[in-house]
Amino acid sequence: MIQVATPNGPRRLTLSAAVASVALTLTSLLPSVAWAQSAELIAAARKEGKVMVYGEMITPTMRALKAGFEKKYPGITMEFIYLSGAPLMNRVISEKDAGRHLADVIAVDTVRMPVLNDKGYLVPYRSVHQDNYDRQWWSDPPDLWVRNHLYLGGIMYNAKAVSRADAPKTFHDLLDPKWRGKIALVSPVANDLLFAMFAGFVRDMGDARAQEFFKGLAAQKPLVFGPGGMRVSQGVGTGEFPIGIGFVGHTYSVGREPGYSMAFSPTDPVYAVGGPGFALFKNAPSPNAGKLVIDYMLSNEAQEEITTMGYRSNARGVKGIADLTAAKVVVAPVPTGAEAERLRATLKQLFGG
Image 1 (cartoon, helix red, strand yellow):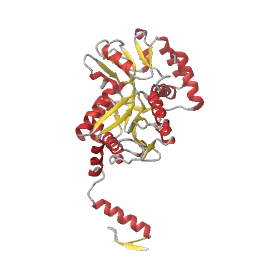
Image 2: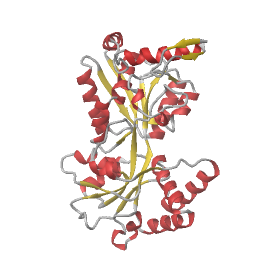
Image 3: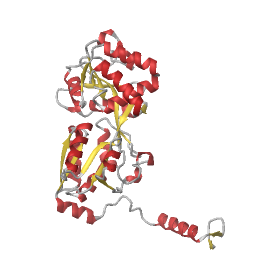
Image 4: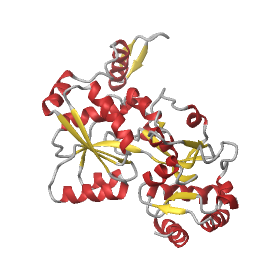
């Protein structure tokens, strides 16, 4: 036993408890260095000169991140390749299985990450910004990725073709006969994230009401596109489609394009249909630059930029666009097994594959 002084008088502690107490005290006295990157890491990354990111985050988003990263780390070029979730996974697996190591970092929905980890494609990296995220967003085991922001699924519309007063306020408003043939939809069969949103309908409406809604929506003769969401968002932006069901964050990213006019309809709820993590590949050609990409993505600096493009950040202290911050966001479920097969079969019958 060891006696230590405390504000409430001396206490007797075991050796291990005493060590922990001293360590905690020293930590509180040291200057905060948890957020500082090492000069050695930055120097090593600059020697590599470039970094390749494979990601499912759309091109306008990645362009903004590329610009911010290259401004923060001059001399390092970020290259990126965009593919939607399933095609991206297929590319990574085929390359890795062939022993081709072309990318340094992958940015993909975190529900897909365990497959890559189980195959031995990822290596741990604990970012200097990781502790700015609650543990619910960390990988298990930790230090492989952090789900840094959320994709939001819901209703968007062309603001020139549809007035705010006339826009659908609920999902059931989509069943109004006036929207027949005027709705574009990201396929809930080909796109896993929209599949999760439709699973959210089942959970929140109940199976019977959800099935009735699915049938009513199919009767509206929507134009169904997949697997990515860009086609729907671009069509809404140009006015080709008055109404879209897809990734509402595109209202603020795709909607920036010249000539586009997009708006978001804040339904109750808005569904969080997934969210990406950034992970470091094993045998990365530029591992140090890859670590800087992960650090940058988890920084408040990058997260504040991300939120301007319609994403909900998981970083503490980052709020974002007022409409999205005020929206009631609920996380959609990820059905598996027989439940997933049954729902997918129903959706395929109604909306095609």
